[in-house]
Image (cartoon, rainbow, N blue to C red):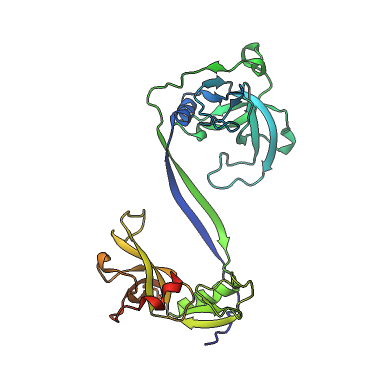
Length: 325
């Protein structure tokens, strides 16, 4: 079946956001807890260099590193880039400079923000110091930013101050962090997937056939990844299909209103040359199987299949879908 092109490619804002949770080893725990206490710790390598931020293994020898030292809250800008339009979640709401700062006593540089009135006020070699956040919890954001610094506190040259040994012990140490990750961008699916999405809005699934190998790609990609040629012949597939492989999900995702356990499967739609992803419902999770014949159940707004349910047909023979595993 031939499908006419839509008037223009689609565009839409898209946000990918999730919390990243990780536990901390003794080195990272000491570093982040130290920031909460307005103390900057580094780690000394076998060669005697001090790394800030600290790492757990020597980047040159892979040896385990545990010798913590305290460095100064002042340092020198090694390189920088001006940020004229800060984005959501960045350290400062007004224009600022991203800087690499080698803190006094360290051999490596720390990336952070520098509060400066304009790019003309920033240069390599600029002396800076940490501006601590008013409220600190044990995160890199406990450093609110850096600020220009014209002198050394107490008259002592911090550039000559040796790092002081530190045992890394603090009360109530930070043992884990949750780092929110977020990516905002405008997504344009291109002509091939635009046709696919327009088809879904009409409750049809449209793929594209490779003129060389004849494989039908769903969703279409605009080109065959195997043959490297453009795919322009639109083909309507399905709506029914066959479960090729599947998994049982036992962990409930945040903000997803689906009770666990549930089944997520690869489904080879009739006429398609590869399987796509879909949720299986309308059947107990422990009765889903390879070869199960399924059909789509459309979302309330009818724009996409919400899930797939059994058709009641006999299971497909393995030889009919083994190449699609």
